[in-house]
Length: 304
Picture 1: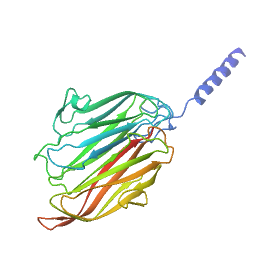
Picture 2 (picture 1 turned 120 degrees about the horizontal axis):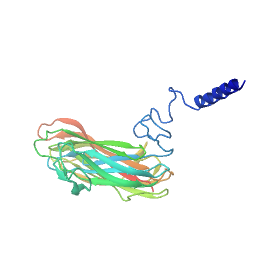
Picture 3 (picture 1 turned 180 degrees about the vertical axis):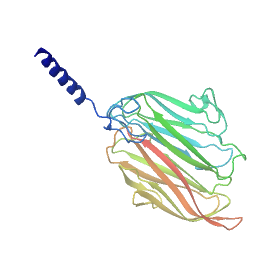
């Protein structure tokens, strides 16, 4: 009788242990998520991601048509839009072969002293509180004639943290010996709170080798923002503010502005990106060839 009781107790304990273990076919809350997602539970890599942990990232580049031996002004922007602080946060990218080599001190980063082709460039942020954001600017210079015309330069940046939450973003610029158009966008605020206005300034120009016909210019209205005003007759068309520029001569320049208000209540650390573009039919002086041309730019304002 005593042996029978012991067998029954042992069987019950085994049953409890088995019932408390997930089967091999069960998926965690974060399974199938992309690299930018935050996992609420443990993943197959053994990292325990706390619920509500999140990173967001964006990359801007000006100009997107760059001459040889000129610099590209990049900004890598990262934000903590989650509900928990993050630790050991770092941002990395790789030095492109088409950039001149440079010393790490010039970009306030770590690349082993001298940033050469294929070397990883690292910015260490460390503790990253809820709602925090960080803008990392750097401006590498493109090599000269050894870089072929129309070469695409694709920058890939990523952010990581101690708990495995990360994000990534890319931006492509093109080497052009004779840029057809250029565009830059700036914001008058480094961050914005609900109810505040942001003025976006768009500066454009056309190349010296031709004219731009039926040119249009627009900048997007980020989610959560609303239109307030625009200079020079800018009108809202869908989720954009648009201007009709007409025909532009060679070497033409101009400026337009749009004021947008943050009417929504996104999480602190959210990145509001306004994408802008100028486009036209470009007529080359030397050949008379007509082609569709455009230039792009971006401005990012974190929510605080």
